[in-house]
Length: 361
Figure 1 (cartoon, one colour):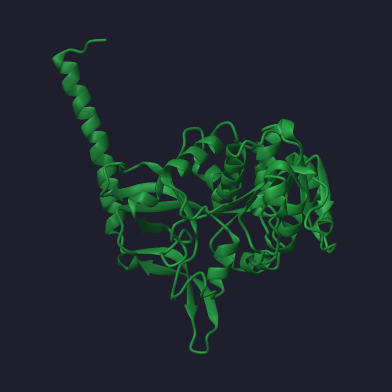
Figure 2: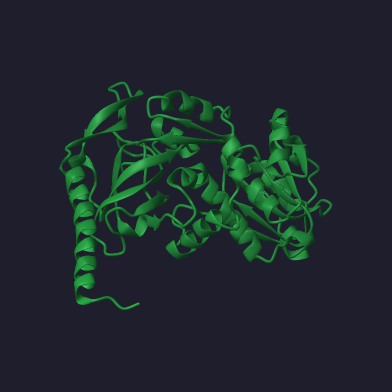
């Protein structure tokens, strides 16, 4: 289609106005001097208190991209940061929140424009860099991923770091050659944030999923998410001392570590693969070389924090398309910044099920 010179002039002016409005919007936001956020403070007697307060925009760290946060999500690491775990957050006062989804208000990187919808998870966000439990963040552009087509900002935070970690685990498992025809796949910690998403994705891809949990009262939830069978975690507490047990699983997505991971390694069939991403059941791993040299199994570590950006984009695109799970909405609750405080205790006690999305805007 050809346009006349007059039509081209009108189109040029039209796009100029759009760009100017977006830029003006970003400038207007930047001119605001304060914003609401949860701030954790350390008292003189080394207690940690949390409160929703007004923060100064000028207190945010340097970064290429200034983002208005629409949604965040709650993760175990957020609760650790919010309760003063110095292994997660070294200095206070601090705003936690390792996940954020929102709109670009200003960018010094041409890869992102004002108005772009984006996701930030991992890296140092919410740990020692002011995080997603506030209305604004400012971060390096290398941390920012465009929101994939077909996914809303809220949906991205239904997954958050936990869902992304689950998807990355499945991504690595499939990359190791594991497919549905090879047999059952075990998911440990199946009712948790990572485990429940892993169950849902694997089921959608046609795998027979066995979910292991200490919360057998949640068996029906796991079956609805797609698990074919649910077992109590006590079944993964081998005390025989044998280096290997009967090969049962083609693959394992371990989210807890510790003795359950040790037992799972013994039960993987020839050529199988285990991914591991958590340590809530223990940080030590006592095993032998026999499952590796006699059955040729693989153990893959999953790190969602420093995951390369190309892999990060691939995984988010899969979550927006082929791996999308509408079932998760039924097991996701929404809360406000003011309601977060009570959630921290619940998640640390293992009493929070499913996913929690935090509405910021």
